[in-house]
Length: 203
Image (cartoon, rainbow, N blue to C red):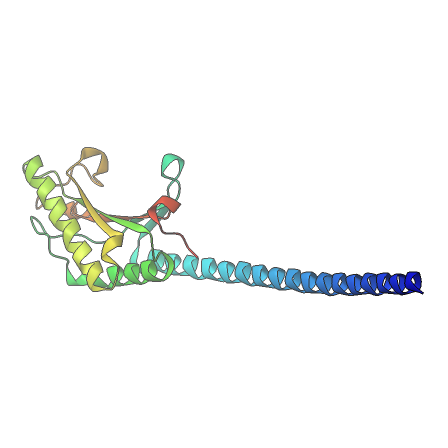
């Protein structure tokens, strides 16, 4: 009788184990399906965000004439925005006609690059003293930075640098001062750093 009772207990335990394993297997399969659905949903969301971002960048190109370039090599992960933001001779104030493109840029940064580092690069034409032009380039970059701050871009995301009249960065090297067309050299460029070390990637 004792052997029969122990045997019965053994079969009962095995049945319980089988039931528990079956339940665990079902739970794991359900979790796998849920994970796959979640990942699939995230992939779809990312694809939609990338498509929306590309649409925004294309609008910057077509509506404002911006040139946007994904940098390569050691600068991979950085996006250069050559914006049509120019300055009057010897001036650093953001012009009213250039505010719309900066508004659009700020909206793109806030929505798609919320943690990225944005460098505002300031430039001048070649008229005047190089040291003065470095200061003027900085003043222009600082003015654009202040404007972007006013549009809600985080202060921690923005930094400025001046290249002044650096010959390698002039758009039209022969144009300076009050010569027609020289304003293309009196500009800012914006570089968005999306590398992980900058803290900002599209999510």
